[in-house]
Amino acid sequence: MDIMTLVNALPGAVAQGLIWAIMAIGVYITYRVLDIADLTVDGTLCTGGAVCIMCMLAGCNVWVSILLATCAGLLAGFVTGIFHTFMGIQPILAGILTQLALWSVNLKIMGKANQAINVNQYDLIASLRYIKDVPFYQNTIFVVAIFVAVVIAVLYWFFGTELGCSIRATGCNANMARAQGINTNLNKVIGLMISNGLVALSGALLAQYQGFADINMGRGSIVIGLAAVIIGEALFSRIFHNFALKMLSVAIGSVIYYLVYQVVIWFKVDTDLLKAFSAIVVAIFLAIPYWKGKYFTKPTVAKGGDKNA
Amino acid sequence: MLEIKNVYKTFNAGTVNQKVALNGLNLTLEDGDFVTVIGGNGAGKSTMLNAVAGVWPIDMGKILIDGKDITRLPEHKRAKYIGRVFQDPMMGTAATMGIDENLALARRRGRPRTLRTGITARERTEFREMVKELDLGLEDRMTSKVGLLSGGQRQAITLLMATLQKPRLLLLDEHTAALDPKTAAKVLTLSERIVRENNLTTLMITHNMKDAIKYGNRLIMMFEGRIIYDVRGEEKAALQVSDLLARFEKVSDGEFANDRMLLS
Image (tube, rainbow over all chains, first blue to last red; front, top):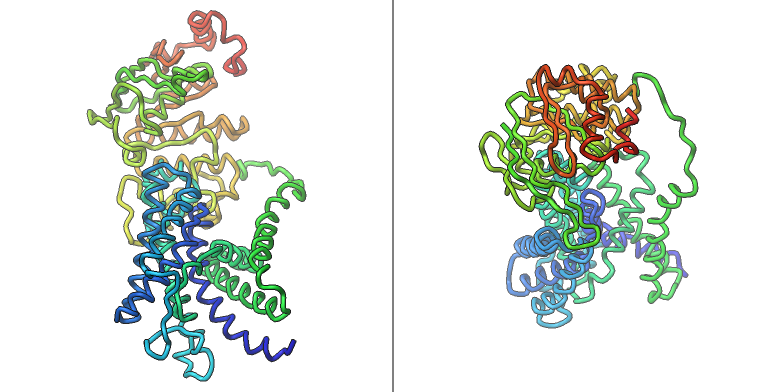
């Protein structure tokens, strides 16, 4: 248990955390803004990676590949959205159906379960080789941090527009939204598309980073995304009220998740157990607000007077 | 202005819970009518308002606004013509959004939602002035989340939202029933003021017969999914609660004795 092993592993953990931060922000949009637990993402992450790697292997420019991967994610979100709104399937089941279908789609995209890409032969923008001994502008941590910043900035702008506000209203109170003339079905589809687009973007970066796309790379990713959301909220919900800062807290949550993950590995915990460990931690954190409401409610004093009428 | 023609609606058709909520309902409103709607539980009052608002499709019949058939129009498209305030104060506003943001959403009712900014600086000042007129001390809390407001405050904001973009028709579904008597009276006075100032065509459901007589120019009584009494003008103004009770007794064979309408 050499402390230097841990220290050396930390930059990689930060890079990975930042890549997953984009995915976690996507989860935040469905889970917190739209109030839908969207399980499509487990499939979409791999779709993003697969599309990106296959495009690059076919000779596409890295940026074009990332763009196409993101579009594939938008499409996956669209399918879930149609399942949910047009076909009336419960959101969680709609997501599971798309996720299942994506398994086949991903295999067809890649042609086999795993496709590797060599960092020396292709011009990648993120790689675990680009963590140390590269100029800062090529460093994956820097590059992905820029991605995260741009994603947060664009989403902050978007959710302040008329359309963005109406999506927030849809997630908060669909009855009210419809009464105010908002097409809630359309908005849910748009929200799911944005979310899955981000997840696919994250998958594209992740596949480059690890040097391959794998059919299993998205398994359980919803839990990691939720963990990032919950960690971010647990740490910053009292001080961050602005929407941009809330997304930033999710990104930080994701980085913390990977730092903790790295420490756990350093402790030589059986890695087979890590997913169970993640699931239990997320379950407990999800339960805390419920328990608080149920067992620790403080008696509130009813306020009277004209001002509160 | 509003025409409801021979509308039928049955819930849970074919099950033991089958309930005929609207049973050949006919109603025509004139421009500027302020109609109070009374009737026992299950008479179809809320169902009528929901049918007009398009919450679900009706089984049969037609609904027209200004001669335009809106029967097949989805709820969010009808919102262009209709402003609504619900019984549940939680239902009319987005709790996690600010007062100003809620009003901005309402300002865009009936318009496409674009990528322009969701709330402009000019709107902020404008909304502040409007909220100030409500006299609830909320003008300094414009960015507060609506979820932090009391039920009465939320209903007042919802009322403002429903009428911000002047609707062709205002639907008030027992919007004061969940409030304490004093607050209810305040919200009701405010409703009346807004309706009068904007000359809005209004359907207002109430369980309070005194209010039903006091407000509006026309009163309708519903029973088993139909309108059984329709009175307007001076005749309506001269009504007494006892008259209405007598009418209820007549149609329902005394069933109303245990109804909460008597509590008013």
